[in-house]
Image 1 (tube, helix red, strand yellow):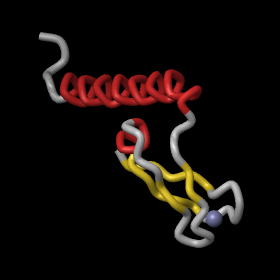
Image 2 (cartoon, rainbow, N blue to C red):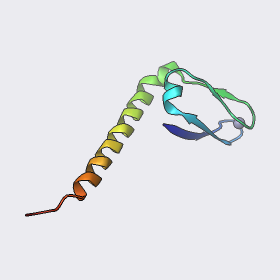
Image 3 (cartoon, helix red, strand yellow):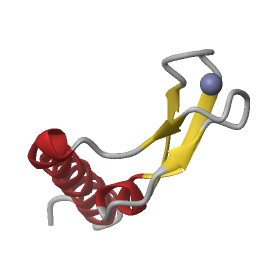
Image 4 (tube, helix red, strand yellow):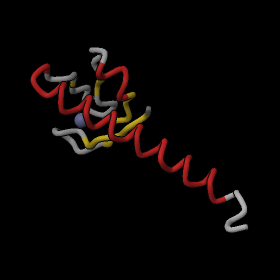
Length: 73
Ligand SMILES: [Zn+2]
């Protein structure tokens, strides 16, 4: 899952893969080379956010699937 966040130093938007970040990969700002990686303390919250996002995608897919069915009958 690709995400972006503004660099805390120069505000350049840094694109990163949330799953890779969660697995411990560190990313760096293309502009100022500031490195960022996951703070172990914030991991449970981030994991929860990712799970919530996946659930939302699943619900959206269900909604679009059911809308193609004929209503009533
Ligand atoms: Zn930067």
